[in-house]
Length: 327
Image (cartoon, one colour):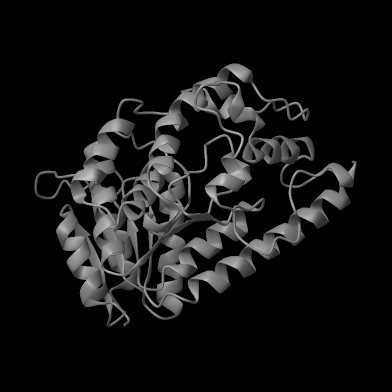
């Protein structure tokens, strides 16, 4: 391994900006995505063997990098007493009503002074940052952005094959071009709003799932090599509450990590949000019956009744968290 050719700074002093990750992106050139720093680092990560790495030197450099990211995130969120995390599926389509619901929740919370964080990828995560990004703009501008994104509603179906699994780190140019088309409207929206008018949020993605694009709507991204560190941080930083939008295995993992923390420590609000459904048909009751397990585990805590909400109403989510805000 040539340590001099590593495509990242293992001793970063700050978090990643959209420009740092996507500076080489050219909307007129479908090959430009694979020249972005985000993809160069992804290729390197797979060449080194991901987790665990093939080389001691790579493991050390990645650990130094991730420690720098953790410190950068801690320094930044310390400025904000009210931090809300939104978790949810990466497969949520941009034209799904749930996507708009998450974006509007994030929009209202950001306008109300909450800092929004998420896993920093597509789907519900992108919707989180899209809403926060527009918090200094009108709701009509947010709706226009959602409509523009909906023209390219979902990621390519073969996105997980972006990087060759043979250890070469080779990027599939055809998939990269398809991802370029998916990212282009998002980056055009980011470029259309001056930096001082963009609402703040932090994305916390990982190169382990780097074939899913980091959302450029996050004004800052703390991107990790080690997904385990990232997951632990996500469910710890949402001190003012965590909203669970519709998701599957990854979201359920986060729900029960959070539940364990609430059981043994301070009880932070948990909100389970789903698309409108008939009585008793809530996503978190039927699709994945989380509610009875959460209630059985946490009902012994005196905070349960006041700090857990299952709802299909975006306004109810915002009101619930505003009543529980720390400052």
